[in-house]
Length: 167
Image 1: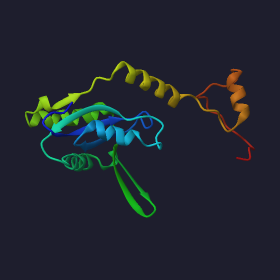
Image 2: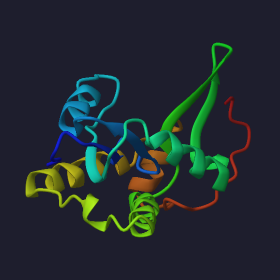
Image 3: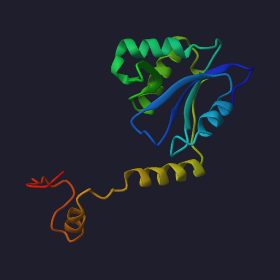
Image 4: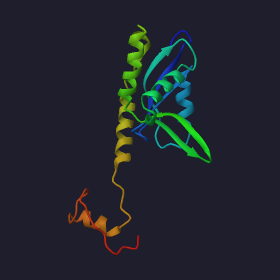
């Protein structure tokens, strides 16, 4: 994958949170993926979308700063236990994140350092299965609604006004 012991800025996707991409740096992307995917805290595995070989470590920090300046609302930031958690997750499509790396590569004349990873057939199948599971309709907290939907009395997306329900 990466030659000459160069590190890379990577773009990762995960069906667990389809509206976000993870943009980070790794000396060894395969090792980084194994670290991230070892966690049992996420339902689906991270997938490598693209990477950009860079000559220096932690160059992703400059990229994060640039994205934050363009739109600070892209980054996943939250207050938790009195601390600000600033993560490497961005509310953007993988193709938009790739466009940013592509522009940087073009400006620097390093287009050959940018790789858009083609998913394997196994990865594509896993992605489809994850999407199917993620988007499967969950049952409502109002049991009669499920029955009414099943019977065709109401449809998903219908606007309904509930009166005198304890919740």
